[in-house]
Image 1 (cartoon, rainbow, N blue to C red):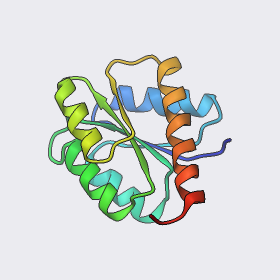
Image 2 (cartoon, rainbow, N blue to C red; image 1 turned 90 degrees about the vertical axis):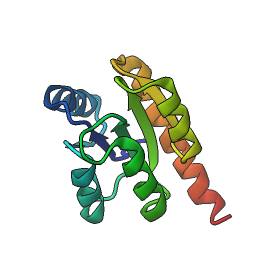
Image 3 (cartoon, rainbow, N blue to C red; image 1 turned 45 degrees about the vertical axis):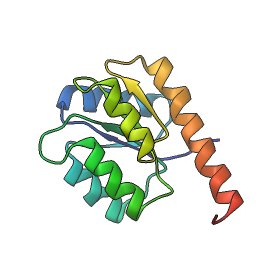
Image 4 (cartoon, rainbow, N blue to C red; image 1 turned 60 degrees about the vertical axis):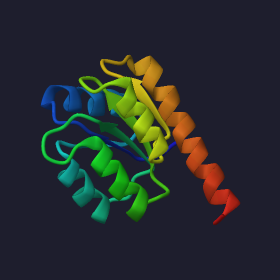
Length: 131
C-alpha cells in the first residue's frame, strides 16, 4: 500500500517534529508544516495524499485550511487533530470534507491505521473517477 505521502500541520514544534520523525521511522514519507499558510505553500509544489491537520492554530486555523485544501486539492484526505478545540470542531471538519478526526494527544498506534484508511479511501476515489 505504501508509499503514500503525509503532510503534518501543527504549530507545536516539538509535536510536529516528533510525529514526522515517528512516521518516517515506520517508512511513511512525511513532511511537516508549522502553520496553515506554510501547509498551503507546500501543497503548491509537493503533492501529498494524506494531511494530518491541527484544528487550533494561530492565524489560519485548521478548518480554514481544510476549506482551501478541499477546494484546491480535493483528492487530499485530511485527518483533523483536535486538542484545545472541541469535538464540535472535529464534527464540523467532517462536514467540510475531512476523513476523520483524532483527539490530541493521540497514540501513533491509533493514528497510523487512520492514515492508512484515509489513503485507501483516496485510492478508491481515484479508481472510481469523477462523480
